[in-house]
Image (cartoon, rainbow, N blue to C red):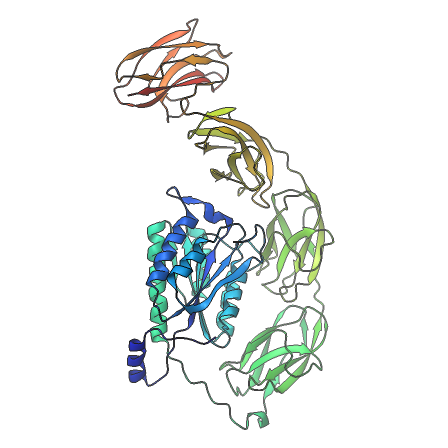
Length: 587
């Protein structure tokens, strides 16, 4: 892809002083449109904040630079291939750019690694300087290793740089994303709110502009006319294991854009599988193919694709075993072990029994380990745990696993006032990353409003919606978004009395400091029952004043002098339950 100038005056000055040609590389913004962007910060959806900040960014972007836009997760839920170039790199048209950004509605997954590769390909990174600006509010959730992909793009490209903005991430997640920038010479900037996001993107924009101003295209070394007649000495192991990395060396290096590769023995000129540029080196590394057989390692001229040297290599099958529990609970984490590591970039995964090669659900890189953890699928059934080669996606070993349904219950109040906070509980934790939420009754799977992770707790709190109606409180698996348990809850108007066996009658409004009489009917079965006055937002078993209930059915309360919403509660202390509620507004 052609590059364009940053500024005519700036370039003229650089050209005069440096006596070299300079051009600004194309820039692609990779925009997170995963479902988590509907989450809120300070009461505002993150996608709304991102739209507003992006509008300011593109309106300030230099008009003579090329800017493009890639989005992921914006068309389909659960699809790791949902990556699209919405704007090819071109001189910025702010209004059109903003219109396209504002039309993006988050829906899906977070395929960061594949999006980086997609953006790099759009920018033709092997032949041009290429800059990517990634904005993400989450970590990779598809089959990819963003850190490794970033390093590979930097190694193979002419000048690939990725700048990253981590939006609303915790410290651990920020560290996990920062490697993308550090592996490519870019900058990483965290942002936790709208102001910080604006500052972060301004920092990145300034860095991109600085890079472009400093970037002087160096003339490539000329290929000697006699290169094809020169002899190259090449060496490689006689035998390597399928999918494993191995070392090769050569001498001399004729041109830094020449490359080395491994191909089936006797392949035509120009064929390649795993390959790398020679650059200025005399040694490097390749990854063996997934299929055993006879192969050749070749040194190939970039100009014309002619093989100058080759050596034979036998690729042999790797011997490896993998083990896992015979039975696991749907959505729960479990341990996996394997006997050896072929390549640190290989991965282990769990898939339905008999799945085609290359399938995956929950997965992790093996790295240098011999054990790790997976999360069981949400649906019960027969599955396989597999050790899979990174190169070629071939399964080297597998073990059967039965996934069984989790048995879980969740409980919440039968009714709650609109906008108020309520407590709920669940019988067990399947996965600490599962979450509980409240949604309109009958909502489709994966819906959520107010929500929280379960962590390692069996109790939590949620805020009721502001709209009255019937709702469900749900316990939802993080893996697959499946609802394991639900409980019906009615959201009633903010001033509605609530009873669970006791009906309370109290004045709806009163003046500060006045004395009012409260009546009730019904009772609990505990030995210690009390009628109390509390602030509406206070915890259930805290109060301003309280009276023990014996045979009485009424009680006088002197109201506080401070206006606001207060609640009369009938408490059964023995059973830690609230049997009735009524609101008094002090005006």
